[in-house]
Image (cartoon, rainbow over all chains, first blue to last red; front, side, top):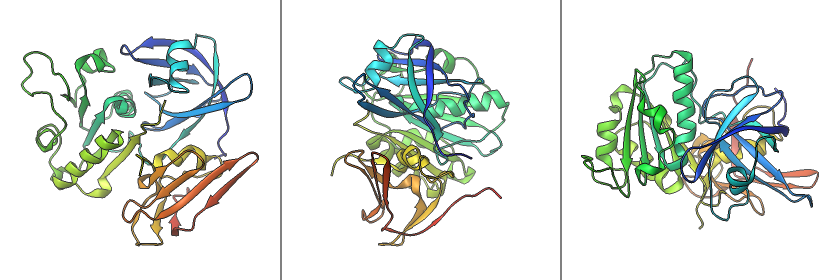
Length: 241
Length: 87
C-alpha cells in the first residue's frame, strides 16, 4: 500500500440522473481499483491557486481506469455546481482514493444485506448492488430507499429491472405516487420491519444519508434487535456541496 | 452543536498520513472507555480542523489540522487503536 496522492481525472461522460443530479464518469490513469461503498475526494483548483475539495461515493465497480460518481447539486456549493453544471467532457479535476474501509461490502460476504438509503445516500448502496450483480453473488439484498418524491429517484430505470435476489422498496417522505399503499411519511419501524430482514437472520445493515436520517434509521434498527456491530453507517454532511 | 459528519470523512485526510485504512481501526475512548471503529466517531469540521468526538460521551478523541507542508494530529482522547494489518 502507498500513501494517498492526488491524481488527475478527466471527465469522459456526464448524464443527468435527476433534474439536480448527474452521473459523471472520469478516467483516472493508474486507478488502483476499489471496493463497493468506498469514496473519493475531489479537488478543484482555481486559477489563483485557491482549492476546494469534497468527498463523493463511487457509484459502481471500476472499469479499468474509469470510475463513476453521482453528484447532487448543492445550491451555492463550492464544488458540486462546477461538477454538475459547468464541467465539460475533457475537463480535469484531481481525485484521490479510494478511501474508507469501514462502509464497504465485499462480494465474498454471504450474509443477507439490508441497504437503507436516504436521498443521495443511495450512491454507495448502488455500488454494492452493482458489485453484487457483477460478481454473480447470491447474497440476498434488500434496499429501502427513502426520498422526497418520485422525481428524485436515482438509477430509476436500473432499479426497475428485475435483479434476482434484490428487493427494492421506495419510501416517499413528501409525496408518493398516486395509488401508493404507503402514504408519504418519514421512515418508521414498520418500514424496516416489513422491508428489511428479521434480526434473527443476522443481516449486515448499511445505512447512508443525511445525519438526521442515518441516526433515526440506525435507532430503529437497534430497536428491532439488530446488533450494533452489524449496523454500518455513513453520514452525508449538510455543509457538503 | 452544529450537525456532524462521521469518521468515514476522516478516510481521505488520514489516508494522506497512513498507509493502512484508519477508519476501520478500532479505538477506545480515553474518557468513557467506549470501543468502536474510527468510522463511528462524530466528526465536526473541516475548518479550522477536523475534530472527532466519541459517540458515547462526546469527549474529543482526535483532532487533525492540515497546514501548508505539515499536518497536526492530536490523539489525546484515544487509549488505544487496533489496526487491521495484512500479514
